[in-house]
Image (cartoon, rainbow, N blue to C red):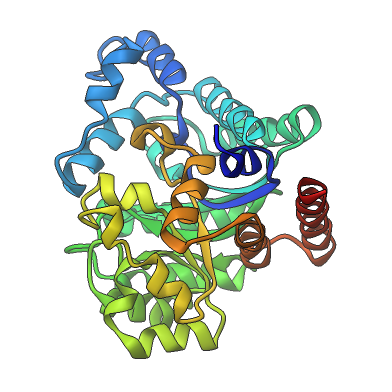
Length: 340
């Protein structure tokens, strides 16, 4: 382990773009697959590495949904949520906004109240036992259409779990225009939730503009194509609209051809508030520590730069002011002690 890797391993962090089911470790996926033997997902953890090799973004969605199908009851939900937090604790992640897709569970027969109870029970246990603060983003699976949007908005606005802070939109972008989801985002925002849709991952800058203008986006998930539009980059920088950048994910889903071609440096150089995230870490053979190491190489960062990157996520988060100040101070103290 290099000195920089060692620094990253101990660096207190926040993560803003990481998916609930997509964070299931091979061990948990294999356990769930064994519990549900009618699934096509392998039970052998080693075989999962091949299973999680994606031909393109469409194939990634296909594989992702097969893992979603393994989460069939409230016990599965609770187990997965707590184990994700355990993996985060090992990486010194203090705070995470975890993207959940309740529609995927409720349409499989899990009652919405049982789903919410399971995630909330896991959230409270993770904070008290592991020191990881979890907050939720309820995410519309775009490929499931307006039915999913209606159900997601209903659960978010009617049940309003304590940990819920934001409302999102994921899944394929091609053929799933953002403006059709405006009424659902309007409802969520009226209920006090923040708007954090995916946009511009596999489509052009127009999708990001739609997310901003139609959905009131306060952060953009991925935003990979933002660099294709200088006016958009300037707008993001001027209005301090953060991008949730996930480098390894973008390569794995073929949104970007190679890491060397990743636009993250152009984003940062334009003054955009860039945060680094892992997206669906076990599926992509990564974790947040690895993504910070990737970012260090792409952005030419030393320990000071990495600490500043970690503080970007704090700034862009939906923590309250006191919690932000506390985590930023912890990052500063860690960096100072490392130098000492």
